[in-house]
Image (cartoon, rainbow, N blue to C red; front, side, top):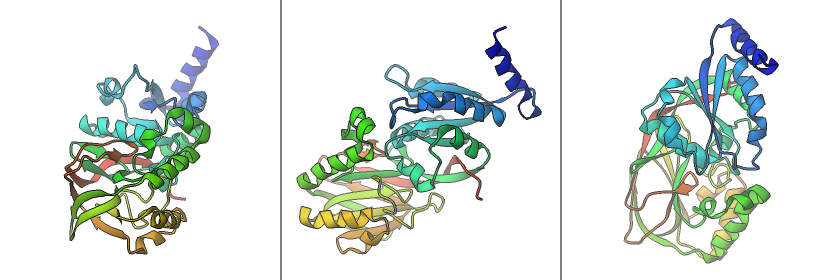
Amino acid sequence: MPYHLIYLLGRIFTVSGVASLQRALIIYNPTSGNHSFPQQLDQVTEACHSFGYLPTFYRIGPELEYDQVFKTIDQYQVLFISGGDGSLSRAVNRLLHAKADLPVGIIPSGTANDFATALGLERQPGTAVRRLLAGDVINVDVGQINEQYFVNVASAGVLTTISQEVNNAIKSRLGVTGYYLKGLEHVWQASPIAVNIQGEGFEIEEEVMLFLVLNSTTAGSIRNVAPNASITDGKLDVVILKKCSPAQLVPLLLRAYEGRGAHLNHPLVEYHQTKWVKVTSNDSIKTDIDGEPGPGLPLNIEVMPGRLKLMVPAVK
């Protein structure tokens, strides 16, 4: 028998003194971020083995899509997802639609990783897996928008479709800077959208530059867009920027990028917490869900409290 097989079998049957391993499914997007995750497979495998898990890697690509692997999701005990917010969102959608109830661990390898950033998750794949397997599993909220789910944010308006428009080559070369460059183009071409937005205790019917419905604190690589947001509070946080000129928009965005939440005190910004949101418009408006194209209006958005089991590092 080849040595590497003897070694692998030895690892499988001696890890933690057990005779067999539980199974971990690891879905990864090889083109996310700087494309480095495929070079880290051995470290991830070693981390899984050390905690008694046998990893199965599933590479997402044009010819290998999510639906195929989720037909056998009941064979696994944990699910890891390596990619950006879009990869995470697509996988969670399949998981929830399959009514599977297994813990999800995030290995952030995308360009922005807004949801992982909000949670302060480790980016080095091997270390990330070790910390998650040594940590806890908590029930966290997700958002539902029409027939889809979102993990981090649903949005529309200026700046909200940038991640859809920046291609993988630019993301790989420039990282978040590519988003910022596209954002400058958006700002100077920005036009308001006419919408009706309703939630618990509020209703707005006017032209706005953008609206965000957040589950976490971070969106668009901006920390503390909604500083009071929590993934366990059973609420969604709504941030609405009213109609304004580019000359007003730029300093307001700079205030938001400072990450202190000061933008929420500006008279052009409305902020609400709610369990549900309804958005209608007579116009055709592009929407975005976790960096991916979202559904057309009207939008019926609600929080699904504790709907997802999420692996998190242990509190030190």
